[in-house]
Image (cartoon, rainbow, N blue to C red; front, side, top):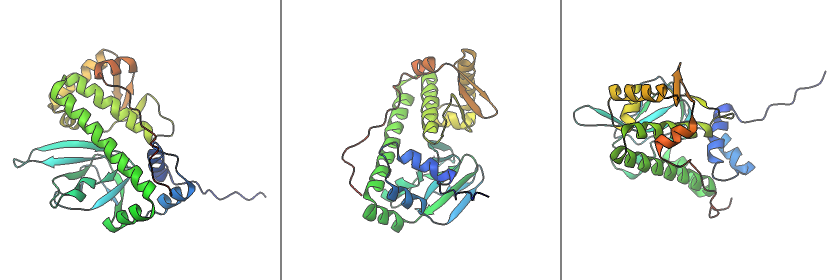
Length: 251
């Protein structure tokens, strides 16, 4: 009888995180080991749950599922600001504010690891390259938000929606071992509308237009890009290309 070798590969949720970080630099074994041992209290949330309320300063590493940062206005209306996928650190903007203004909500069932602020400080002190890569990810998210705000302010709603779909597709490819033209897309029409600044009714008509033109299809919460060149043409944006910075600190 041949003994089975012990499986020492990272769990699926950590593979997604490692894959995202490795987009900027090849991770060394010691860095991967640190990520595998990066532990804290784990929590699970159902779709619609508040993960972190306005004014709170907790940080979470998103292991599985989709979440979003939102701002609730004085009249009770809500505006989604960003959609978060596995590998994102939820609540980072809170570090710069005495009274954080955003709320983090679960868009699907999610799993998170709580990160204490001292843990984050330890990462900067003892794993500066990992910390620098996380900093780059936060700047990447900022750049994408700048792009979406510019499109929302100056482009048509159809262009904004096409660009959002394209970027979600590209982001999903970062955490999927075998990216295809189809990807899980749990956002409702209302949530898509919030992200591009239009009503759910308007969003419905935009999706119908893209479907009727054979650009995308949606079935059972799976979005398929049927005509990627046409989607890129409507979106009017360049493919997402990450840099591989040479200035990252050593181990």
